[in-house]
Amino acid sequence: MCACARAATVKHMIEALGVPHTEVELILVNGESCGFERTLRDGDRVSVYPQFEAFDITPLLRVRAEPLRATRFVADAHLGGLAHLLRLTGFDTLYDNHYADSEIEAIAMREGRIVLTRDRELLKRRGVTHGCYVRAIKATPQLREIFARLDLARSARPFSLCLDCNVPLRAIDKTEVDGRVPPGVLARQERFVTCGCCQRVFWEGSHWRHMRDLVDELVPAGRCL
Image (cartoon, rainbow, N blue to C red; front, side):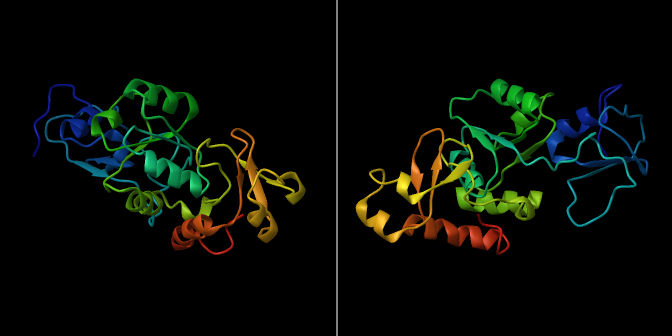
């Protein structure tokens, strides 16, 4: 049983209980699916469900016009490590540790991005329609959490983005990196990529192999570029 104000909507009731509306994908009132704007009446029975991964609920009305399947993100100031790991796996992720909550909300609205945060109040903002409250504390467990929750493995494109600039990497001929990488690297390596923004050159060295171990854990074989 939950008491709520006169003319309260489902959204108001859910968030009054501490659950951000972005954590919800399906609402049933008296057994019928509805949206956030539904006004509650005394005696209504409300069932609230998180997003579904393994069940087909297409005959039911989800609470948003668009499903939680967009794979572009904006991360809050506490999730810099997660932002870099999402870029590692090929997901466009904006991050700046100076972003204010209002900026994150505006970016999410303007660009249709999923908000990633450890701040439930940010997810309650009206303009944030798609978001995830990240429960894990450290970056690698956070990445595993987001991959599992949003079923990201099938759309991952590992090693396709610059971890610092969040822009696509492009292949570059070995002849073009002479003088830009150590001589030993030039002698041993055949494949190079570069970022058109920062102009850095990357190759499959020991650091790459360490990152590949994490990628192989999360992404099906054959998905790496």
